[in-house]
Image (tube, rainbow, N blue to C red):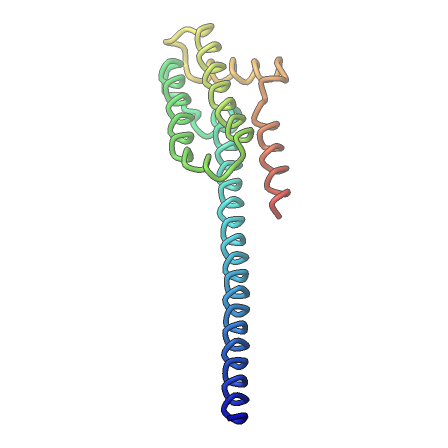
Length: 167
C-alpha cells in the first residue's frame, strides 16, 4: 500500500511538473511571438515613414516644378499638372496614415493643402495663356519671399524625428 501511494504521489508530482513546464514553454513561446510581431510592426511603421518622406519630397513645390517643367504648355495646363500630381501622390500614399501618428498625418495633409493653395493663388496672378515657365517662376519667387511657405522642410523634419524615435 505504501508503495502504491508513493508511486501515485511521484506520478502526480511528475504530471504537475510536466504541466508546469509545458505552461512555462507556452508562455515563453508567446513572448517570442509578441516580440516578433512588435518587430514586424516597427518595420511597417518605419516603411510608412519612409514612404511619407518620399511623398513630402515629391510634392515639395521646387522639386515638383523641376520634375514637371514643360515650356510647351500653358500656365493653366501647368497649374492642372501640378495640382493633379500632388493629389495623385497623396492618394497613392493615403493608406500610410494608419502607421503614423495623427500629428504627422495632419502635417502631410496640411502640406498637400498648402501646396495646392499656393499653386492656385499664384496661378491667379499669371495669365492662363502665359507659358508654364512664367507660372513656375512666379511660384518659386513666392516661395523665396515667404519662408513660411516651405512647409515641406518642417514636415520632413517631423517625419525624421518620429522615425528615429521608433528605432
